[in-house]
Length: 369
Image 1: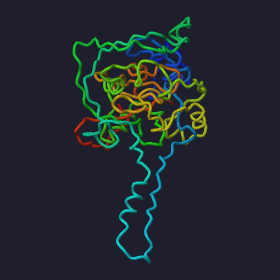
Image 2: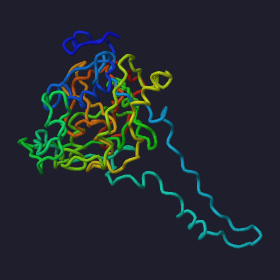
Image 3: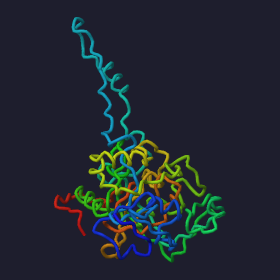
Image 4: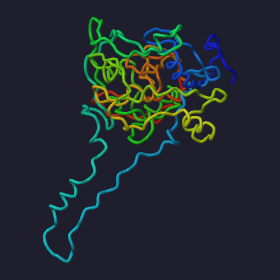
């Protein structure tokens, strides 16, 4: 595919685009922000051929299939063996020993999940309820040396090491929000790797097939930052202790275009490239990266598609939360440069749903505008 310079990006879009982690990924790693983000800071556009960054004319490539191959199913714990008393000794059923054995069963995975409200939400989802501030001001006290020392700050990630506490809400009124959100990134199954190399259109389709929907920008913000408006799920001081973030950036191979997720694993070259770039961790592997609402991995690991209400095709798509690389990895920033057909090796998603309502799957959902 022909490499496109940033000036010719918009005029040379194809029906599908792949950006490279030098795309959504590289764009944040190099620019600190998407070309057009919530903060309104411009970043360089890099496409499949020309991108270091995050987009490609066929999608953005943030390489990441599995950590060591195709994602496998979550391990299933074996059933506990209950001791039964010998049949040669007649007597009442050994209720006490059975009870004791039952109490020794291994804990269920969900027993270790962070505390969250789940009432009124489908299985695997948590309830997010409160008063959201749309206009939140976060003031950085100290930037990363890479940013401070850069002559051209538009080419490095604007990583802030510490913010003033607390954040300030400048909205006249807060907006009540009440919804359900997947506890984990899609497929929302402990032990599996988050799905990436997925376009916004496909992400929306997969949510609708379950009777869910893509989360909105405001819903992601609130589930991540809470009423307090914390820059990161873990607070005001940047650290890689809690979330999968700030991993060294690996340069993608720009000579070949990445394929969509399922196709990539069937292609030896794509699979090998994905494995080389991939630094995702498995769902449920790091339960310390949790928001106030009990939602896991909202900062780092993989970028997440959200819907931008009020926008029209092909601009309804936004990316939030950051990924495993050395990028902002905050709650608020939204990358709007990548369009609905774009896909990248670091871009995934999670689903939302209305609270107190049953899911109504849409079997006819399609990955089309």
